[in-house]
Length: 345
Ligand SMILES: Cc1ncc(COP(=O)(O)OP(=O)(O)O)c(N)n1
Ligand SMILES: Cc1ncsc1CCOP(=O)(O)O
Image (cartoon, rainbow, N blue to C red):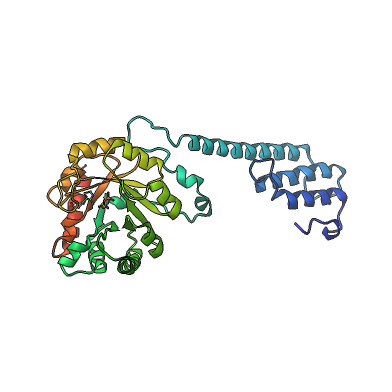
């Protein structure tokens, strides 16, 4: 601080100069590798010095000159030191607990660890993922939308109108440039409705259109590498069929897993079916929220929701929404079925 020069200090007695120097330098000081001195330390140091300096009665009577002031200052100092040490202790415990599995439950008790360690968390710019958004996950398919004469943009608009809570652009056949243009338009639509938009597989497209995140499969870029590229504020979903894959997704910093195919589907070729029991097994082991996918429609969605597992947050659907004439109507219908089932469970 440039003003901590003797000539810049006001004309005051030596002890009070000492106090001013202490206050001005103390606010940026560090003890060894420890934390920055919080303002409370500075205040305490200030009042302690004033109480010592005050013994000779040279401060004009505005600060009480007492041993009590010194004692309460020291008590305040001890209190704030305790809070700092306790905070470090808890953060360190969370850090070292990252890979602990507690029972077989789905709770994932330390899943906020990543956010705690993130610098963005401290600046308040970390976008929090809400697992409840997985409730009705609309996953697009360019082939189906073409078949019904819809653009990706219109399909996404209709799904949101019908009540989709999150959208994924899964455009397997699209050219990159065409896909990026469509993705940018969908980002705008989703942003204005407060619905997160994820891109299937294409981290490059997700970055270019500033999507809310990506969904990756077991043969795509590993989630931890996607996380490094996207940063802590983006949503990452991983397809998982096994307990080991679910465990890995958690370790890699994913936000949720997509588990399926639960029922047989024609949308994804050569995709083994897990069945409801397979879904249950993965959900019970997963420390991340789960969305079920594969052959889910208005006729069987209730059997998925009725599993009643706390980390099974919803269903992801392609053909039951997009291989239909009216996307908004199908989405609305499925949403109401899910809500009814949810309120009963
Ligand atoms: C929510 C959700 N879950 C699973 C998948 C399947 O993803 P992936 O294994 O990458 O297969 P493709 O979608 O790429 O065929 C998904 N897309 N979404
Ligand atoms: C992408 C994907 N991953 C597992 S099953 C599946 C297809 C889901 O499509 P649909 O909802 O039409 O069965």
